Length: 105
Image (cartoon, one colour):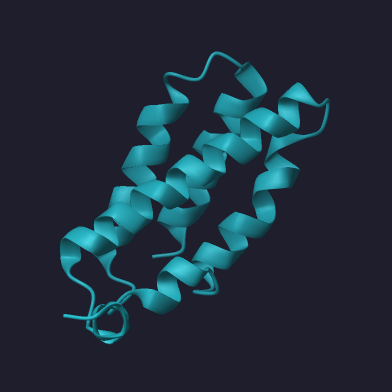
């Protein structure tokens, strides 16, 4: 299978799950970097959370469906990582993002 054929093929659930975990990792990086630079992590996360809730993130355009399972995976991943983040404001922002995504189901 060529690279082009692989790109056009329907994504597998495993690939979609990896993309969701990468999205969670990106959200964590944004929150921690914002707090480290003195900005509000919740405000910095807002565009990513809105993008997820409205299906505008590139990862969602590549998935076969915006399923409950993928949302649950993102919410649980963000919640789990928030428990490990040492910066309080970042952890609170990640938990708030997880709650907002969970409500968007």
